[in-house]
Amino acid sequence: MPAREPDCSCGRGPSVAQGKWYGVRSYLHLFYEDCTGASPDWDGDGSSPHGAWAPLIWKVSLSTGTLFLLMGAAALAAGSLVPPKLEGIGEEEFMVLDVQAVRYNHALGTCRLVGMALCAAAGMLGAV
Image (cartoon, rainbow, N blue to C red; front, side, top):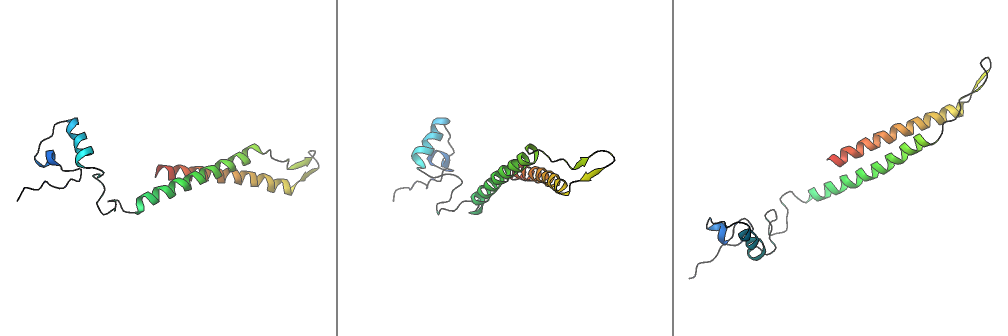
C-alpha cells in the first residue's frame, strides 16, 4: 500500500510535515498549490473559530457608531449654528423675561449636550 500524504490545512504540508522550510518560495508553494483554498483559521466544516457572532458584532457596532456620529454631528451643528433668542426685553428698570426664548435657548443647549454625548458614544463604539 503506498504511503498517503497528510491532508493539508495550511499548517502542515509536505515540507512542514517533514520539518523542512525553504523560505518564501516554499511558503507560497504551500499556500497556492498544497492548500488550495484552505486557511489556518478556518475549519473545513465552514465554522469560524471566533464563532458566528464576531462578524455580526463588529458590523452592528460600526453601523451604530456611524449612525450615532451622524446624529451627534447634526445635533451639534443645530445647537451651535442656530442663533439664540434674546431672553430679556426692555431697559434696566423695566425688564420683561421672554419665557419662550428661555425654553428655546435651553433646547439649544440640550441639543449641543446630546450631540457631544452621541459623538462620544460613536467614538467608543468605533474603538470597540
